[in-house]
Image (cartoon, rainbow, N blue to C red; front, side, top):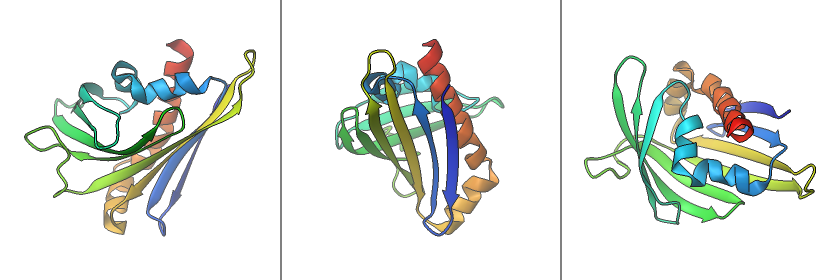
Length: 166
């Protein structure tokens, strides 16, 4: 069983989730590296379509979110750094008309850390932690007011579900 934990720190403007997982690092990395897997866990309770997916530094991930109330939101990541099966840093926010990150609007920077604990074929173990860093206290508070923190736990649970059930 995998445990999902969450944390928030208003002084550091961060909200985090993580999990100790009984899976190989490559399977966990694929949750971000495979756009179809990313669509299945990344935005809780919404349909996500990844339209462009480039996890190289400077690359762009463009996506569309279809909310249950029928709204459509276009978003994008700009990849800052990516180390295969170890770490990923990306800036997430609204997309502009070209489908790239609109930096004139608030963004959130995400830091993914993936640590291999055991490479045993019988009992592989890894730990994944994702830290979201907000631009301002007001932005963080607005996110927390819209269930962002609660959705972090759902993200972790959906991530584990995709790992377990494919």
